[in-house]
Image (cartoon, rainbow, N blue to C red; front, side):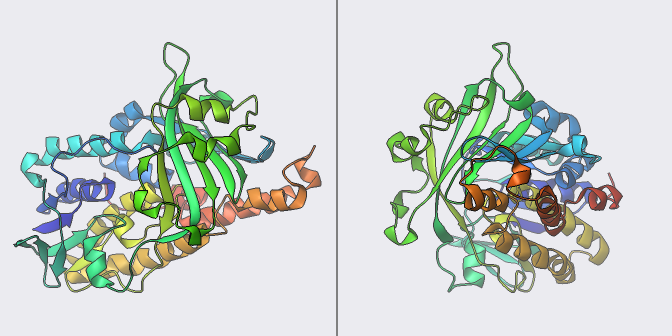
Length: 407
């Protein structure tokens, strides 16, 4: 029996994978009632492929928007670099934008339908582990063959592995996030990132166009402050006060995208820190390993979080098929995934795909008539290609790769 701590996207995808290959498992989730929480996320084609190979193609299409365009813009709305995404870019699979909670519930419902309700135990918060394969709770323990920690950025299992680590790393960036019913922009299947390193907005649809002609637009407004100021760090994940950030974006109505209108139109707005953790040099202790945000929490740039969690799950399934339900399987998984995710985590702190926005801001303050007069388009193309290769979703690489596990 494999024990999984956490019923988020990582843990649920792993449950579906283990069920697919016939390995017994049980998921232990801290909350008593799993509900569709969160805001929008993106799933890259390599992870979409894995969901398709789990038989979830129609389910995913029913809850998400197949992204066709990805673009960087200045603080005045001028285009810097726009590229096709998903099948429009030549991938064999689409890229999806979706509400995180709806994706989690889709995975949850599929797993329950296939493996039965008893495969998930709720109200069971993991507090630690024993290396031989024991998952610990308050005053209780469960014995398993392997333990997989999918318990997120505040993982209790990682905290036991790295007791000196402390709180997540915060560099001063604050995110305000919401969803708003609004008029579609740039064809209704585009992601837009506008601004520069210390002030930006990200917007993309997470629903189709309704009878009212509107879509649900997921948006993120970001400002960077002096991290030594603290910025109410004890109050993260709170309902936001618009006056804390709306004035900074009041002039950001580009015609094609009305940023202040999106902010004012949201039913609720929440404040989050943009945090990650330093890469660590070991995920696996005996029969216990980390996955997803417990293993490699990273800044939310480049659309890597959910994508890599899904890939983690499929890689674990593949190494278990190759090595059996043994610690050798966990070491094989770590050897492949840890170096790549460490590189992405460090790149996302400063040289992620959005670094081109600051290049242009530094060169001209974001105002120009032709981008070619500011920066060579080949530099932009090379930067985009380099990040795709680093993150593992180059077009040729993904299309040519064999399946991680058979359908």
